[in-house]
Image 1 (cartoon, helix red, strand yellow):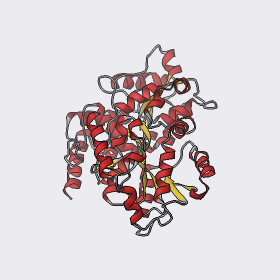
Image 2 (cartoon, rainbow, N blue to C red):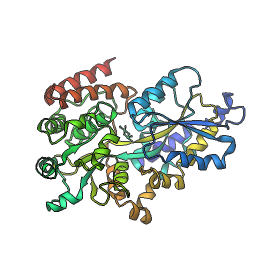
Image 3 (cartoon, rainbow, N blue to C red):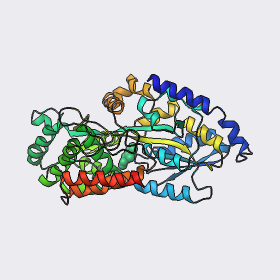
Image 4 (cartoon, protein in one colour):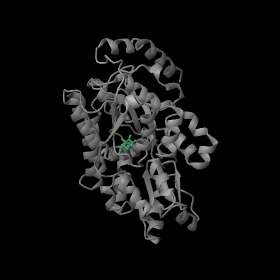
Length: 420
Ligand code: GLC
């Protein structure tokens, strides 16, 4: 914490000239204020439009237009990077980017450094601020955080007199023996090859005590018994059928539908899925619970998810962009991110708010999961790293390669990215 605090101080000093230089660049002859576009991946809970209307009502000269891109993180990444590479200003002024894209976007010069003192960074949960920095500077502002949870059918486990699983062995046992008695599939996550598969594979590897790359984001560390155990756990599930084959086609939404339709005993997903599946009208409302992800010997590791708000280097109105970001990270709006959007806010104090904890009983579990969540490798080539992980892990899950061979190949292919 102390080191992080010092880091912020340095940032504040380094960037104190930000506003002046923004104005000198001549991009903002009008003081940098005016209309904006905000690009985001699919808004799965449809909360963002009404929330932005609040800003538009009070900022008529700085109206924001929402551009909603596809649900899949990879497709959104492709559309954003195509636009940013386009040379022109691009269509997007403010970008709601996945936490693991900050390094790539910053290294490419697509997003501009931001002045830390304009944003309430000290009020945020500890691990999230780091995802917004690159090369010692702040390039984005944390907006939403995320950590994987295990959702389970409380009604079914209660009938069997079983507690929710804490270890992989318990999960595997219940998925194999209890689920079929109730006509349910055992366990699913997001196993289609896209960013979601990278997340699920990383959680399995991290939970077993392994890593993928060193902290500096280049050294390949994946070749380990832990990685073989993690990938082996998922591959065995598919081979033995307690992970249904259909799960190999699931992203977040499809897996949530399967659980919400009453077709699964266990689901790994982000907290929004728990909130949506518990809401009135859901088939499984009142019948489900959420706990930390299990691991081989007790609670496992979640990958740190979420998104950060960044400003296009060529944004039409950088001052308005920063003002919009300050609004979206303000306390009242962060509260709505949770209450309307079912997304985990970045402001730490909201997790202790008694009224919110009453309404969202999983908040303390979520805060623990976020606090202990592991970031994905921080690399300007993260997109390539993730593509390799997806491709290799898919071959292990479909049985085309043994987990041991898959881990060896993963190590080779990741090393090739670092060498390029
Ligand atoms: C969620 C997470 C994000 C992750 C994505 C994977 O949107 O917040 O960090 O990359 O899911 O599908």
